[in-house]
Length: 342
Image (cartoon, rainbow, N blue to C red; front, side, top):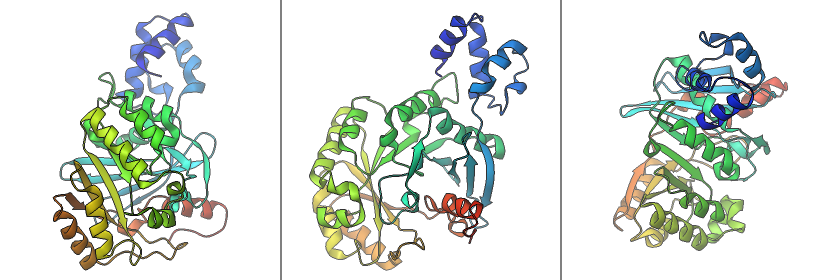
């Protein structure tokens, strides 16, 4: 609940309004893991809210010996599991959170979609991924990317509530500018998000410069063409003034050629955007391979010749299966007796 909703809720049930602010502070500032930790809250209120208190359980945690990345498997109250990743950078700590348990988008190079979609996450479950990581590590999170398991815009209402609460000055008060939301390209929802006039960063998973190639990699391309998706991104920029990021996973022999770079350069030339080149993380269920460093660098140079701002994403947690969906899938298989962690 937002603070206003919690205040109304308390009032409707005969509790004093100021108790709402106290409870909200315990949940969203002190990040308690149990109502029993709320030392100034009367017992009758604790019992009243106990069943509605969300607290995710850490069931697996892997720590990279290479770069300090922490990957968490978290259990939801219904037994489903999700994953979240803590990444320490020089500019601040980032957490990549999941928006759904599983995913139905079917992108061919992504492990998140291999088991399909179980359900949407609530705003509380999205928030608590950050809270439990801060509490576990004792470190402040300054940047959030909604780029883990799931399609965020397929869970639109919960995503918006999550953003409102995580940026609330009465809570963790993380700046909207420090939040990135990624989508594979749900055109109506991109336009809807633009009309919210938030100051978050929107990232589109593009991954190809032609409809034919994109359809090979991403089933959503059968519904929305690149022209339709780019029109939605331009609408987003015009409404918010916020530069769009285009995520481009480089798959060896699929979308990493000189011709691909030239096509992408022509496609995006003149549009105020940023391209994030991502060396794809291979997954055992697919035959896709990571592009080599030389072809990635060449791809970057060709884009820059079109005055496009380009970066190559730094790989994090390579020794702990940090690609989206890998650890969650391994944990589920281990629980089901189908295998274990690599």
